[in-house]
Image (cartoon, rainbow, N blue to C red; front, side):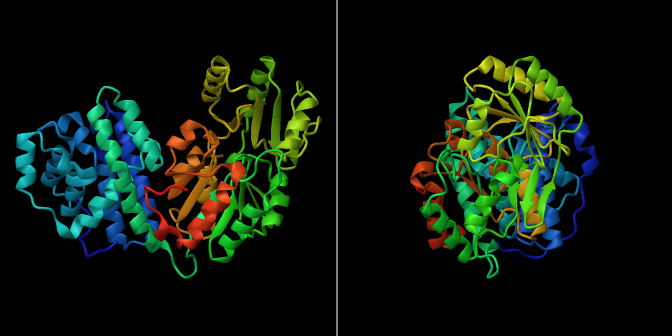
Amino acid sequence: MPFVSSCPESGFDIRALESLFTDRMPRLAHMRDAASFAQDLSESFSLPTEHARLLIRSALLHDIGYASALRRFEYHALDGALFLEEKGEHPWVVEGVLRHSQADRRGGRMPLVSEHYASRPPLAEADWLVRAVTVADWRAAGVGKRVSFARRFEDIAARNPDNPGKVRQAAAMVNEVRDSFLEWARDMATERRPLPWVFCDVDNTLIRPGDGLSDANKTAVKAYVAAGGAFSVATGKHPLSIAPLVLQLGLNTTQVAGNGSCLLDRNGITVLDELREAEEALRCALESRGLPIAVYRPQGIETGGLWPASLDEIFDRYGEIRPTRTRLPGAALKILCIVDGDDLRREDELRLLAAELGVDCCRSDRHFLEFLPKRGNKGQAARTVMERAQWPVLHSLAVGDTENDELLFALCGACAAVANAGEWTRRGADWTIGQCADGGVGVFLDRLRLGLGWAGLRSDMTF
């Protein structure tokens, strides 16, 4: 990213944002999530303080023109830019709002809007900021929540079923925006960290349940690490279950376990979040419905009262430690519930229960529905791992296969799904790689290593 000097921020009083969006709070959530991504961009590329401030401010204000009180031309980018200009906002911020996500190209069908753009030549010195705000816009869902590039497109398509033109435009644009990021991402590589940190799911991604770690994947992981890359597993499994795998791979990084509720490193297990008072309420609610459950704690896994012995064999197949029939001490990291994913009525009921109890819920397998603490997810855990290692958060890639990998996909710089992943997961990934059974992860790592990381990646690549 090229940068030149700038002036300190001034202009619009950010504290007034909420009052402008009282009737459009989801839009404000999107703006805040774009600013959060811009913060990660700033830190990952080590921007000077004043450039970082202007970028984050531009991302936060990029959709201010959607506020009802600011409407003039019914074109949010222009309406927002004119308002901010009148407030004395920094010219680069005005430019970021005016031209983000190719707004200057998309206003051509509105004559008055076109006239305004024609009268305002682009600020060449702010081109980097416009592009960076665009990237941030495409990593925040339209109604709030951080997402991958591909999921952002799916979000636009889902919210515009009656506007095929907008969907086609978004489809054409997503690769262009992603490629802007991939081009810049090369700047994150240094002699000390030449390759991105890869966070990889285990079951049905790195290892097919019932099989061991393949020689091909083992060799690929070790070669990737030897070439300067970092590699961590990010799994729903208990940390004690993955300890042998970590030894096999020779990893000295921190691993994400329990779907992000805890970490595993050479010093043992670190709890990041727990279910607390929701644990007993979940136990009672799930078992009253006749559902078998397993509670994960740092010392092991305990079963609920309805757990049949036959389920132990499923845990064996998945390489999970066997659960005990007695209560264990310590924090409840998560509760795993055995429920068929094809039972949509029950699925909706249980997800509503999770929302009522203030916990998260995700599916890690067609048989496993998991209840997690709010801050216990793979994305937040991966962030913690990289921040502790002083590693740029966006200098990372996620690989997975199902819903519990979604927040990891959203956090990392880019993401890939194995070909055996569900359709929803594949549509939210930047690339689809080979099947788990065919060593898809190993092939991806080798291509990444031989292509020198970000330098070898493009939107249109196939693996």
